[in-house]
Image (cartoon, rainbow, N blue to C red; front, side):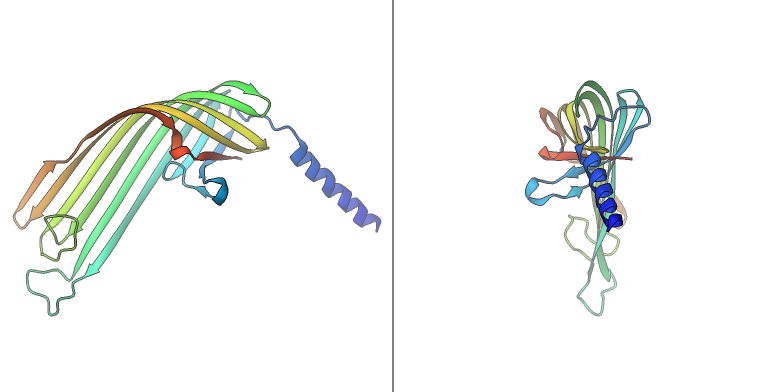
Length: 225
Protein backbone atom coordinates (compact mmCIF):
# COMPACT_ATOMS: atom_id res chain seq x y z
CA UNK A 1 0.00 0.00 0.00
CA UNK A 2 2.82 2.38 0.89
CA UNK A 3 4.44 1.67 -2.47
CA UNK A 4 1.20 2.58 -4.29
CA UNK A 5 0.85 5.81 -2.32
CA UNK A 6 4.47 6.76 -3.02
CA UNK A 7 4.03 6.00 -6.73
CA UNK A 8 0.88 8.15 -6.94
CA UNK A 9 2.62 10.98 -5.13
CA UNK A 10 5.58 10.79 -7.51
CA UNK A 11 3.29 10.88 -10.57
CA UNK A 12 1.36 13.84 -9.13
CA UNK A 13 4.55 15.79 -8.49
CA UNK A 14 5.85 15.03 -11.99
CA UNK A 15 2.63 16.14 -13.71
CA UNK A 16 2.41 19.28 -11.57
CA UNK A 17 6.00 20.25 -12.30
CA UNK A 18 5.53 19.62 -16.03
CA UNK A 19 2.30 21.57 -16.54
CA UNK A 20 2.61 24.01 -13.68
CA UNK A 21 5.99 25.36 -14.70
CA UNK A 22 6.31 28.69 -16.44
CA UNK A 23 7.87 27.89 -19.85
CA UNK A 24 10.41 30.33 -21.21
CA UNK A 25 10.99 31.17 -24.88
CA UNK A 26 13.70 29.01 -26.47
CA UNK A 27 15.95 31.43 -28.35
CA UNK A 28 19.43 30.30 -27.36
CA UNK A 29 22.20 29.17 -29.74
CA UNK A 30 21.60 25.51 -30.66
CA UNK A 31 17.85 25.54 -29.99
CA UNK A 32 16.10 23.80 -32.88
CA UNK A 33 12.59 22.74 -33.84
CA UNK A 34 10.52 20.95 -36.44
CA UNK A 35 7.68 23.09 -37.80
CA UNK A 36 4.14 22.11 -38.79
CA UNK A 37 1.07 23.98 -40.04
CA UNK A 38 -1.68 23.51 -37.47
CA UNK A 39 -5.28 23.08 -38.64
CA UNK A 40 -8.28 24.83 -37.06
CA UNK A 41 -9.56 24.08 -33.57
CA UNK A 42 -12.50 22.09 -34.99
CA UNK A 43 -10.10 19.63 -36.64
CA UNK A 44 -6.68 19.76 -35.03
CA UNK A 45 -4.03 18.30 -37.32
CA UNK A 46 -0.32 18.90 -37.85
CA UNK A 47 0.30 19.32 -41.57
CA UNK A 48 3.15 20.13 -43.92
CA UNK A 49 4.86 23.43 -43.19
CA UNK A 50 4.61 25.58 -46.31
CA UNK A 51 4.04 22.47 -48.42
CA UNK A 52 6.78 20.31 -46.95
CA UNK A 53 9.41 20.09 -44.23
CA UNK A 54 9.86 22.98 -41.81
CA UNK A 55 12.91 23.48 -39.61
CA UNK A 56 14.27 26.26 -37.35
CA UNK A 57 17.77 26.55 -35.86
CA UNK A 58 19.19 29.31 -33.64
CA UNK A 59 22.70 30.22 -34.76
CA UNK A 60 23.09 32.92 -32.10
CA UNK A 61 21.11 34.31 -29.20
CA UNK A 62 17.70 35.39 -30.60
CA UNK A 63 18.90 34.89 -34.21
CA UNK A 64 17.45 31.91 -36.10
CA UNK A 65 17.58 30.38 -39.55
CA UNK A 66 14.36 28.85 -40.86
CA UNK A 67 13.72 26.62 -43.85
CA UNK A 68 10.65 25.33 -45.64
CA UNK A 69 11.39 22.62 -48.22
CA UNK A 70 8.83 20.73 -50.28
CA UNK A 71 8.91 18.25 -53.16
CA UNK A 72 6.18 16.14 -54.73
CA UNK A 73 5.91 14.15 -57.94
CA UNK A 74 3.14 11.93 -59.28
CA UNK A 75 2.15 10.16 -62.50
CA UNK A 76 -1.36 9.25 -63.66
CA UNK A 77 -1.53 6.56 -66.35
CA UNK A 78 -4.54 6.00 -68.65
CA UNK A 79 -4.75 2.88 -70.82
CA UNK A 80 -5.73 3.15 -74.48
CA UNK A 81 -9.10 1.38 -74.89
CA UNK A 82 -8.50 0.69 -78.61
CA UNK A 83 -7.50 -2.89 -79.46
CA UNK A 84 -5.59 -3.80 -81.51
CA UNK A 85 -3.48 -0.63 -81.33
CA UNK A 86 -2.95 1.38 -84.53
CA UNK A 87 0.71 1.74 -85.52
CA UNK A 88 0.76 5.47 -84.65
CA UNK A 89 -0.80 5.19 -81.19
CA UNK A 90 0.52 4.54 -77.68
CA UNK A 91 -0.82 1.86 -75.36
CA UNK A 92 -0.83 4.28 -72.42
CA UNK A 93 -0.98 8.04 -71.81
CA UNK A 94 0.93 9.43 -68.82
CA UNK A 95 0.22 12.71 -67.04
CA UNK A 96 3.15 13.69 -64.79
CA UNK A 97 3.07 16.42 -62.15
CA UNK A 98 6.10 17.74 -60.25
CA UNK A 99 6.38 20.61 -57.78
CA UNK A 100 9.40 21.85 -55.82
CA UNK A 101 9.44 24.68 -53.31
CA UNK A 102 12.07 26.19 -51.02
CA UNK A 103 11.74 29.17 -48.68
CA UNK A 104 14.68 30.08 -46.42
CA UNK A 105 14.22 32.81 -43.81
CA UNK A 106 16.08 34.65 -41.05
CA UNK A 107 14.28 35.77 -37.88
CA UNK A 108 15.36 37.81 -34.87
CA UNK A 109 13.59 37.91 -31.50
CA UNK A 110 13.09 41.56 -30.54
CA UNK A 111 11.11 41.17 -27.32
CA UNK A 112 10.24 38.50 -24.73
CA UNK A 113 7.65 38.59 -22.00
CA UNK A 114 6.91 35.54 -19.85
CA UNK A 115 6.19 32.69 -22.34
CA UNK A 116 5.75 34.97 -25.38
CA UNK A 117 8.34 36.20 -27.88
CA UNK A 118 7.97 38.71 -30.71
CA UNK A 119 10.20 38.47 -33.76
CA UNK A 120 10.94 40.14 -37.07
CA UNK A 121 12.72 38.79 -40.14
CA UNK A 122 12.90 38.33 -43.87
CA UNK A 123 12.49 35.47 -46.30
CA UNK A 124 12.86 34.51 -49.95
CA UNK A 125 10.93 31.78 -51.74
CA UNK A 126 11.09 29.82 -54.98
CA UNK A 127 8.53 27.40 -56.46
CA UNK A 128 8.79 25.35 -59.65
CA UNK A 129 5.84 23.42 -61.12
CA UNK A 130 5.73 21.14 -64.17
CA UNK A 131 2.89 19.16 -65.84
CA UNK A 132 3.61 16.88 -68.81
CA UNK A 133 1.17 14.87 -70.96
CA UNK A 134 2.46 12.06 -73.17
CA UNK A 135 0.43 11.32 -76.32
CA UNK A 136 -1.15 14.74 -76.86
CA UNK A 137 0.53 17.87 -78.26
CA UNK A 138 -2.52 20.13 -77.86
CA UNK A 139 -3.08 20.11 -74.10
CA UNK A 140 -2.99 18.15 -70.85
CA UNK A 141 -6.01 16.03 -71.80
CA UNK A 142 -5.69 12.30 -72.53
CA UNK A 143 -4.14 11.45 -75.89
CA UNK A 144 -2.45 8.42 -77.45
CA UNK A 145 -0.63 9.86 -80.47
CA UNK A 146 2.88 8.45 -80.75
CA UNK A 147 5.69 11.02 -80.52
CA UNK A 148 3.49 13.81 -79.12
CA UNK A 149 3.91 15.57 -75.76
CA UNK A 150 2.59 18.72 -74.10
CA UNK A 151 4.29 20.44 -71.16
CA UNK A 152 3.32 23.35 -68.96
CA UNK A 153 5.97 24.71 -66.58
CA UNK A 154 5.87 27.64 -64.17
CA UNK A 155 8.21 29.29 -61.70
CA UNK A 156 7.54 31.81 -58.96
CA UNK A 157 9.91 33.65 -56.65
CA UNK A 158 9.22 36.10 -53.88
CA UNK A 159 10.64 38.15 -51.01
CA UNK A 160 8.88 39.17 -47.80
CA UNK A 161 9.35 40.91 -44.49
CA UNK A 162 8.11 39.08 -41.37
CA UNK A 163 6.46 40.20 -38.12
CA UNK A 164 5.39 37.39 -35.78
CA UNK A 165 4.61 36.23 -32.25
CA UNK A 166 5.47 32.85 -30.68
CA UNK A 167 3.88 31.44 -27.50
CA UNK A 168 5.11 28.50 -25.38
CA UNK A 169 2.17 26.95 -23.47
CA UNK A 170 4.39 24.00 -22.50
CA UNK A 171 8.10 23.33 -22.41
CA UNK A 172 9.48 22.57 -25.92
CA UNK A 173 6.09 23.20 -27.58
CA UNK A 174 5.09 26.54 -29.10
CA UNK A 175 2.43 28.07 -31.35
CA UNK A 176 3.10 31.05 -33.58
CA UNK A 177 1.48 33.28 -36.14
CA UNK A 178 2.93 35.96 -38.37
CA UNK A 179 2.24 38.66 -40.92
CA UNK A 180 4.22 38.95 -44.14
CA UNK A 181 4.66 41.96 -46.40
CA UNK A 182 5.97 40.69 -49.70
CA UNK A 183 6.40 40.82 -53.45
CA UNK A 184 6.20 37.87 -55.84
CA UNK A 185 6.75 37.31 -59.56
CA UNK A 186 5.69 34.31 -61.60
CA UNK A 187 6.28 33.21 -65.18
CA UNK A 188 5.20 30.21 -67.26
CA UNK A 189 6.03 28.40 -70.48
CA UNK A 190 4.25 25.94 -72.77
CA UNK A 191 6.09 23.38 -74.92
CA UNK A 192 4.31 21.36 -77.61
CA UNK A 193 6.08 18.50 -79.37
CA UNK A 194 5.01 16.57 -82.47
CA UNK A 195 7.12 14.16 -84.54
CA UNK A 196 9.91 16.28 -86.00
CA UNK A 197 9.09 19.62 -84.33
CA UNK A 198 8.90 21.36 -80.95
CA UNK A 199 7.17 24.70 -80.40
CA UNK A 200 7.76 26.74 -77.23
CA UNK A 201 5.81 29.82 -76.22
CA UNK A 202 5.54 32.01 -73.14
CA UNK A 203 2.54 31.60 -70.88
CA UNK A 204 0.95 34.12 -68.48
CA UNK A 205 3.13 36.01 -65.99
CA UNK A 206 2.04 37.40 -62.63
CA UNK A 207 3.20 40.04 -60.17
CA UNK A 208 1.90 40.44 -56.65
CA UNK A 209 2.45 42.70 -53.65
CA UNK A 210 0.58 42.59 -50.39
CA UNK A 211 0.30 42.21 -46.63
CA UNK A 212 -1.34 39.18 -45.10
CA UNK A 213 -1.29 36.40 -42.57
CA UNK A 214 1.13 33.58 -43.39
CA UNK A 215 0.11 30.00 -44.23
CA UNK A 216 -3.49 30.93 -45.04
CA UNK A 217 -4.14 32.04 -41.48
CA UNK A 218 -3.08 28.72 -39.91
CA UNK A 219 -0.95 28.63 -36.78
CA UNK A 220 2.55 27.14 -36.79
CA UNK A 221 3.30 24.34 -34.33
CA UNK A 222 6.96 24.14 -33.30
CA UNK A 223 8.35 21.06 -31.54
CA UNK A 224 11.76 21.75 -30.00
CA UNK A 225 14.23 18.97 -29.34
